[in-house]
Image (cartoon, rainbow over all chains, first blue to last red; front, side):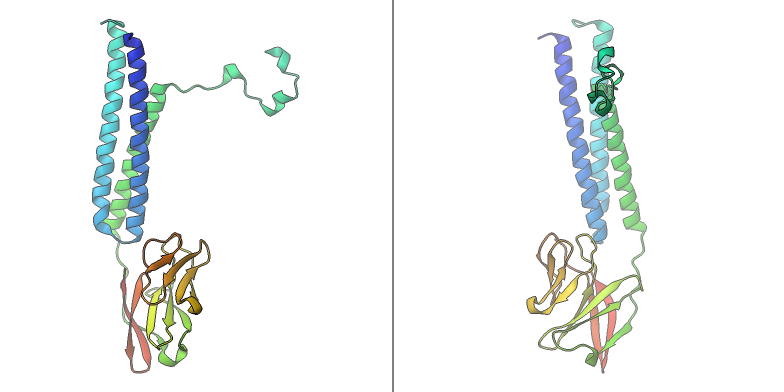
Length: 79
Length: 163
């Protein structure tokens, strides 16, 4: 398989992963609001931390795929 | 392309194909990551509100007299503030129970249904037990906050809230 095609598949896969992460974060926000209304304060900090970790993961994925793309453009498809 | 300009369907679909805005996968990935960051901010804001928000004080206050509610009846009152609607229920055996009147699903006001021994939410057909506030039916999953009621002579006094 050509490197460019591999890169395209990789980009699509990473995009799907980031979208999944955002959906999980939306669920975390809903859970946090529910916990706040129920005054279950102990849930709120772990929820925010989990959301932060997911953000770092999505940022890392984006950085990885963009740098992969940059390398590909810099060195050519067989570099 | 110019041939279509006079067509009637062009009025319903005025966006031209060559003028449409395309979003690349890279832009979408950046947009989603930005959204991910915003959601972290929302979660942190919720945590901040939860950790710094003050729980309203619940002072002891007379809410009704024992003779004000017949067995099987109910009475509305406000506790601890004027913005907190509550409902006092007297069951068939004469015991008093009080709960917040705000449904834990989407904050509609619950009403007493003595024949079902329930507090029903008419908005989405939710129901809570009128003896302990636990959810019985419908979308609510959290019980109603219970108002602690003490009988002092002929007075019923609210002394606190149990979430």
